[in-house]
Image (cartoon, helix red, strand yellow):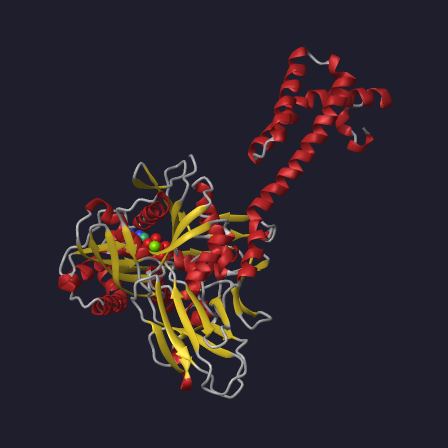
Length: 614
Ligand code: ADP
Ligand code: MG
């Protein structure tokens, strides 16, 4: 395909894909076989092999220790955030403290440790490659992602070699994709239930302006949780111990659970089966029928929870469910009939399912990418901050500067003063969340304004400004008015990567493991090809005239093909040319060898000799 100038990428927990605008319409990027979805799955091996997408997913069952899923759940997280999940992740997850006191999450897999940003970058790279390696992209995130999760996503994009023009909220993108065909006005609710996250957004549409009124969600609610509920029933039945973190068993359980769940979307009854044998383990076979009603009963509390979030978003938008004109369903888990039923009942109307729920987010991201780069002005997107941002004040209380659901870009200022005589610096702790106390909010980082000239207490006047950009990412700046001292930072997440670290990763060769591996193979093969070509020239000079002309011609031809493959960069072509050349030169090699043998030993044939005799 020709490389589009800019793409929209849906970086999903389970699947990722890209789309771009062609002739005014968004289309998804497909591979030669017509598949658009790239499983967000990576397989990493000690020898440096990196597989991403279907190839990695295929290995998940046979080689779970080297395969990782759902990396999105780790983005911008701390180890403490992940307590619930750890028992189901068959990899070692550690938090490494950096010299400056940040805690950075690492996953140990394939003989090294990876940050979630690096792993997500591998997925982004694969998606990017399929689109013909564009350099600019709009990447989507769940609307309910906080600052650190957005920054982690942006960093992953940079590591993957992408200039991330904008981070867009997934439900907003979905509405954009739908709105394209309608251009009407009204209120739209987007219910997005994917593999790992749930989002609900309420938007108003009017003459091409998409304004997000409110958003809410749960970054720990999705189809993976439904799988887990089925798994837990099975695990209890089987009496196995999950604490043992048996990677193979876990992977088989997860796979069986997902298959059962998906079967229950189409059928009233499905069988959960698992059968493991071989290796050192005692054989294990288990089978159990689930009815759709049973499954619905299991997931009901989670669906209730998602609808609570919808209610909260509507409350923030000062709307009742009945005032919503249209409901849009996004995400693979909205294929579950029970989910559709409950959402329909909640809003009192049948949800839209016109666009493929797997593709709608990427399509919307492509529309946004096009709006940003083509200068078209018929559409405008006004998104919001999902969670309030504030500063810690006395007694661990959060003073909120920017409230949730404020349209971005958003700016707010507040004035502080110094508390003691001759205080030359002021330190601010920044938090994100809805609760009143810092201990219940997420600590984003510390901001320091130094260089305040010594003054009596209460004399300095420090204006602190929060600016949330279109990506939902916060920058804090402060200025002391009397002295003019000022400082500005993008709040460095207390547990994310610094800009310098991201820069290093961008250049890090391990980051390019796949390319490195290919490059190494290419060099090895080229060397081998060149040695072979030199040897052939020598043999031809020595004994070429003794060969039948047809064989000679074949050698010359395969040699020329090999020479041209050596100057190219395609591994498969080179390997094929080398194989072909080796087989055409075989008769010549045998001929020469036999001559040598005859000369030296008179009559024995070449097969009986060690190679180094020749
Ligand atoms: P994400 O955006 O988080 O990657 P997706 O929107 O791709 O997620 O949805 C993936 C989730 O949808 C998975 O949990 C998958 O099991 C679930 N899913 C896909 N198809 C079905 C189906 N027919 N019935 C129930 N769940 C499904
Ligand atoms: Mg999704």
